[in-house]
Length: 153
Image (cartoon, rainbow, N blue to C red):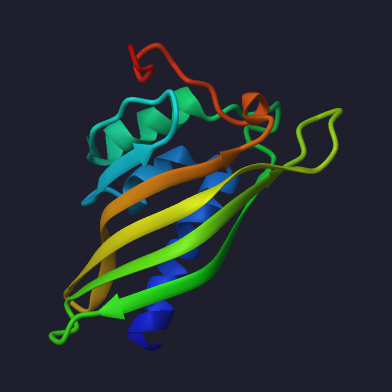
């Protein structure tokens, strides 16, 4: 598998775990990274470590009786740059989150961009940083809550 495909797969795995409500898995995937959510109403300068990242998602993402957020994260226009040593990389892509909460129609709830950095260690790529830039919100109240611990003053 090429480095580009390995990085694309890593990014896709992040969205699969979110859509499955597997916040422990998201924390594990980002265990060596800094997570920087950049969205209106949320204060999180940089979350680190699997436990802190898992807790952030558990507090923020609304799940339903099946334990899932009823979402589908779509990634597109994925641009990846790998450095000359093939040990560091960065990527940028657009994301769109679709959701169908119980009793509501399927709809777009959020759109934005991911800015990611990666490191390759022992032949495997991992996240070093994930910046989530939210550009558009629509009916976010069914997907995401702003907990007191992360609300801006």
